[in-house]
Amino acid sequence: MEVVIVGTVAFDDLKTPFGEREKALGGSATFASLACSLFSKASIVSIVGEDFPKQHLDFLESKGVDTKGIVVKKGSKTFHWKGEYGSDLNSAKTLQTDLNVLLEFKPVLSEKQRESDFLFLGNIDPDLQLDVLSQMKKRPGLVVADTMNLWIGIKRDKVLEVIKKVDVVLMNDAEARQLFGTKSLVESMKKIIELDSKIAIIKQGEYGSVLFMDGKYFSCPGYPLEDIQDPTGAGDSFGGTLIGYLAKTKDFSEANIRKAIVYASAVASFNVEGFSVERLKEISLADVEARFNEFRDFVKF
Image (cartoon, rainbow, N blue to C red; front, side):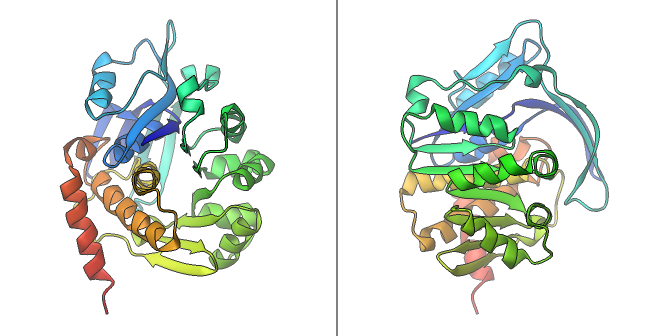
């Protein structure tokens, strides 16, 4: 089943306590599509500059990702982000942001993409997310949207509008509290549901994630990692896995969404073990299944 993924494809300059990389492959659509491709076919809608190496597109294609929706803008440069992580790996300090082609990004879906049953809206301007939703020929069977503190701060009303129109909204605990002006995470999740979003999932970094759905609460722990290299893209990998697994199973029951969250946590934990997409290049579904079973053992009592 094809999942349409709308988001950024970027160059990242990264520095963590464990090393550095320059012009590493990054972007929300990149991480989400690679994670999704472990379970379902991913189709990206994005934009890059003419400086973007063809080898990166070839790599995505080799993983089964459809890149025909990535526009290569002549005479322009690819979106570039430079960031640094300190001892707190849950948050990055942005050192430089060059929007470049992102200033011209207006997602245009193909006829086939407009008919997709599964849509992932990466962490982009909520106005663009709403525009993509308006292009769909029918209401997709499942829409997952991601957001961040920047959009909550400058376009709160639009973020709330997106939440009303999607099935699953993803944000971290600090963003949920910021959005609703409360210190209570449970209250934030209830407010998300009140906005007509069917499912609220809050990401908690190394501590895992929580689900609120049909009046039920589920908590998934973080995977106990010894070797963390780079947290960049972990949230995008989580979201891509979530929708990829649900597209594959076509089961939106609360019990299966719990499984989707555990699979998403497993893939995200692999993501942070390497810089950029290094680990996502290497892992197979068998690796993910093995880690999924480890999660099962963690919560037995």
